[in-house]
Image (cartoon, rainbow, N blue to C red; front, side, top):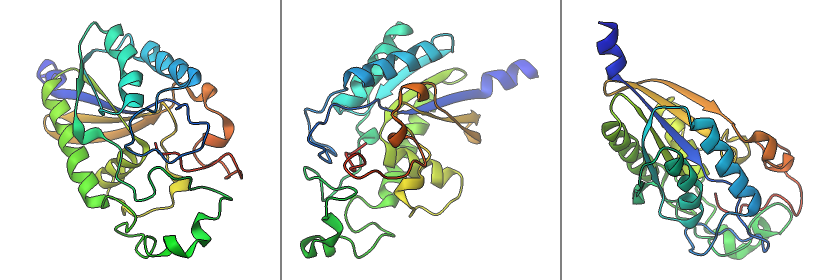
Length: 229
């Protein structure tokens, strides 16, 4: 009986990518050409080491470069090919390609006000409900590919947080500063059969994450732009 139960347990880790090289402080969103920084590559390697002894049989990433580069050492450590799932991509955002963060005056610019009228949808980007649908689809697909084993999905902060909020039955609209989804973190969903029975969170590379970018850190002018995640 216990052996059958073990076969029914599948673990899916949803990882946020590592730090990105972005000296201009652009909210890059879905724009191509944004790669991991040297520190970001160290984060990816650290998580690959952390997961090396786990029973990972499937690794899949968002098509964006930063996610692909984060997932590559994990797939390599397990000797498996890296897959791509478009559903893991960053959320759409009207401010993509612009600077938008603490101290830059973006919220005071009347030209932006029309995009900020509805934080519940939200009005400036991809609806939260749409993010839930695609992320849950990617999560369940990974569960099916890794039945009885473990899978790793590499995605982006907002879609990961929205997925977790949905699974944990919290409201989808939220204060972005309170997301528990630090760079290179793992949000782990454990399935028994087709049912999620637990959600966990860990930060294997937290010592590499700059203090002002950690979950719950106080915003710092000039250092806390919403770069895209």
